[in-house]
Amino acid sequence: MNRTSPPKRTTIYDLAELAGTSASAVSAVLNGNWKKRRISAKLAEKITKLAEEQGYALNMQASVLRRERSRIIGMIVPKYDNRYFGSIVEQFEARARERGLFPIITCTMRDPALEMEAARAMLSYQVDCLVATGATDPDRIVDLCAGAGVRTINLDLPGSRAPSVISDSYGGALELTRRVLANCEREYGLKAPLLFVGGRGTDHNTMARVRGFRDAHAQAGIAVDEALVQTCGYAPEKAENAMRQLAERTSDLPRGMFVNSTISLEGVMRWIRRSGHYAERMPHLGCFDWDPFVAMLGDHIEMVRQDVPKMLEAVFGIIDSGSTDPTIVEIPTIMEKTG
Image (cartoon, rainbow, N blue to C red):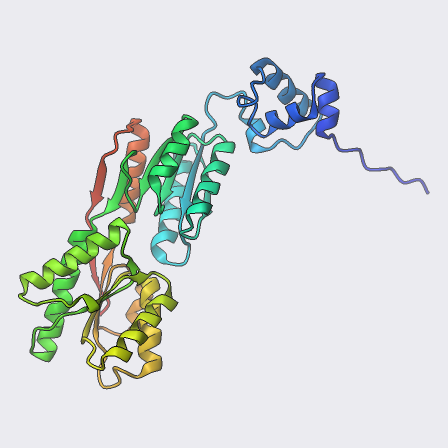
């Protein structure tokens, strides 16, 4: 019985022979690096056409060579593990497709090296615009993209060299702290400072929230000890360790807390459950983040919800306008109570 052999796949060496050039030149064209290699547009066009005719599996770069714009828009995002960033990604994709754009999104784990690697990969796909969400060093990303003639917009954390859209962290933290202080005073009949847990002390959002936290205390005539501001990072394990170490130094922990994300809240709740420190009565909590499932923890939690729809509306408004001015757009937050 005769069996038909599968057709031989076209390789870059086949294309190189057909085009009368080198395999490295073909690779550069198909990888979108032909301009850097100073390969002529005529040769790039010829290689692209041959690849299409030979049924070569074109990558994204080769398919956009003959278009003035790729219609691809990129986003880097630090994490997928909470509702806030998940909502940003979902709405970013929907709004991009409404405009006929193809979204590419990757998670960078709050790692500066991964952020730059992701930005370089986006540029190799010839994105028309890159949205840097929660980037640790947004200006560095802007500089990289500017060198390739690609616009950048910062989301969640601001930079100084491109437009930025962020939440009003100071205003949200000020109001959240006021509410938790009032809840504690109403239940315990005394004015006492809260504990601040979570976030990176060097990033804009955490610094703004700490400032709002401190100002709300000052307005209430309450002093805040430095030991009560635990900017230990966002990971649950870091929040849990911060709580454990603080409890080892003092048994008199505050009856109220400001927790700087639902990610940190996971660690705080884990420590509370395991330690039994608040066995008599759960502390009043304020969380600068929002998730409806937190309501299952009880009615002692106030939350701040960042207005993702308005943030993405502002981002795409900047994209549509073509603006590159390094202005900062602050979007007001929304107060939520779980009970």
